[in-house]
Length: 127
Image (tube, rainbow, N blue to C red; front, top):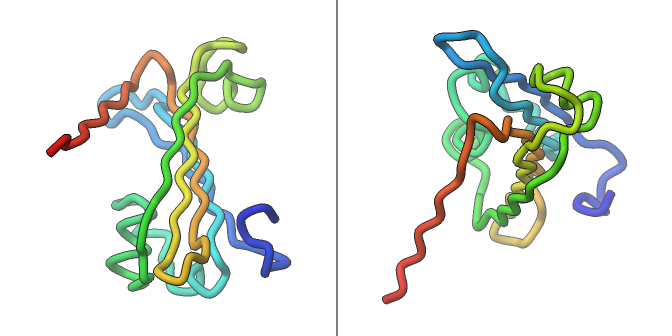
């Protein structure tokens, strides 16, 4: 409701990604999408590509900006179960909010990454 105040419902896509070599879970993602955009999403596309690429290139959403937040957290029981890590293991909690050019939220992505498998690097051009 915080991100979609004009909507009573949104579509939700849950994905559990695994390492191709080991089969070990690496992250769990939930995307909350405006229903009119969800109508154009083929779940097979989400097997191949990230949601942002699907929204931009397949659905042709008018993406303007994305606000990313990454936090260190401890795995709750459900996240620990999905990622196959001990309860209270360190995880990276990512929230990505995708906006269109009118300022409406199109997608809210919440992704939990195994803390022992991921790091994030940000490079800012200072010129």
